[in-house]
Length: 278
Image 1 (tube, helix red, strand yellow):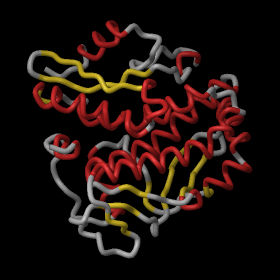
Image 2 (cartoon, rainbow, N blue to C red; image 1 turned 180 degrees about the vertical axis):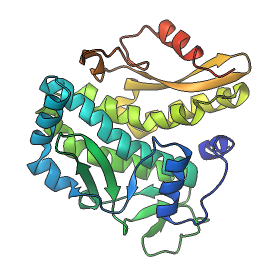
Image 3 (cartoon, helix red, strand yellow; image 1 turned 120 degrees about the vertical axis):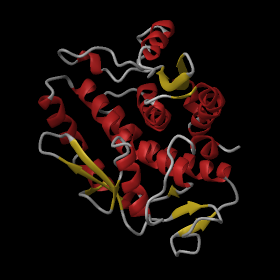
Image 4 (tube, helix red, strand yellow; image 1 turned 90 degrees about the vertical axis):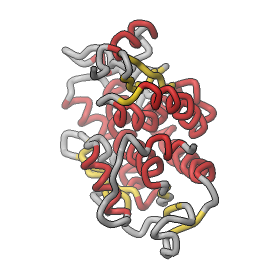
């Protein structure tokens, strides 16, 4: 079975229409964490990156009362969750991979620097399989397999990542931290989908495939995130083990994230076992 077929029992149902807009809305209704928007929502990514990135990070850091490096890391975590988690969910549920140009990605940023929305233009090119209802649409490019879809997704993730990497490095986000945030956002699909508990046998079958899939998207940084499983009786969930830190614990009143590499693996597993619904 393919990875999308293994995931199918977890998120049953389909949108009323197979349009990209309907699919993104369906994903949001299924899990509000998947909040990638259909259509332009604000400033185009290249304009924002060249003219507003530094001021955005400064405003955000001041708003959350932290230093630049921490603010930049937390802002990056939000951006990658908006964009890459949504793209990963679209691929794994609907076998569509978007391939926007940088100018087809837009950001809606509040005055305090907080990221509100990330949007993808309506006429974006997408890759799909031959059985996709929109396979003959002008924007569609048909590929032969899910593995081919993953290669396209990997290419896009790396392209955007490379474009922004030096810009965030100037904001004091180091290389492992930067690429770790991107990989983390991609892997969160599995954590969000299984958080309400799944059959233990399904998770046992899914977890190694999910971990291999995540590693294939960012092969140079595959060691920075892993898909793990926690079990209680016959129920299981997936979670992400990070090998980098987003620095959230440096905010007043905040603790280490559950996924953080500063937690020992055994303690992290015990924490997630306590979250398994029984």
